Image (cartoon, rainbow, N blue to C red; front, side, top):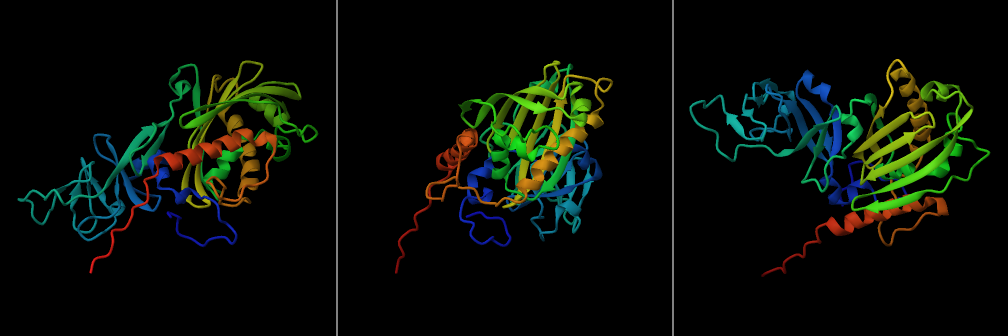
Length: 356
């Protein structure tokens, strides 16, 4: 078991993100790239304490946040060109985690054993991404992010008190819109969601639907559509376990693409990161209007999701929750998570017989 530290809630018996080591093999957002300009930054993922830092040549690294000499935190250290120096005795480490200088013995090359663990790190969409172990899939590609006809609007990067698996459920849940989002785009008088088309790929799902929505005053400033109702042509793509692209096309041609990713900080705590990509300009719709509307929508979700349990019945033998036909996509996502655990988890080791 790989539960994060912390008290268990009574009655929770189903799967949590820390239960399966395979989830260490995916990319997760750690922080905005701009944070690295402030110096070495600490970060923790699946119980692994890291230091993220950027060398003078721009190389970004994620290393174990503990010097191999006397375990001082390297995140308290300082940058020295291409190296990160420990604050305790000045030992210097390169981007691969190898010690390159011991100031007390400058004439001797440090031994190969003088090194700290290095983690996978990448820069994408304005954020630093890390993976604890060899990633099973790449960071999702977003063609629109590289298209000059679109703009990226950074929105949210903040902790939420919920399970990552519950957020995945929510990403596919068309039935909650009428109720949870009644203050923004939902119509509680029409609780039956539209049909959706679903297709699977190796590590995820795609859901397509045309969704009628209410278009209240704040929505009008966000869409540029004056009518009190409109429709969203919606394509939701999920890359297990933690990334979702929601591509929304409105009747006026506006494309509002929401990319959301979650980083597990605990069994019931995530780092929620979201930005949007739009094919309009600041003169058409100010970025502040897009952010304000998405903030209201995400806050509506957050209130509900933070009240849910951390555990989710994914694996065989776990007591299922009640369901309805509109849960199909969410249930497929749960089965996809189960398949990932079953396919990519190492078999349990068998202890050797004791000898006299």
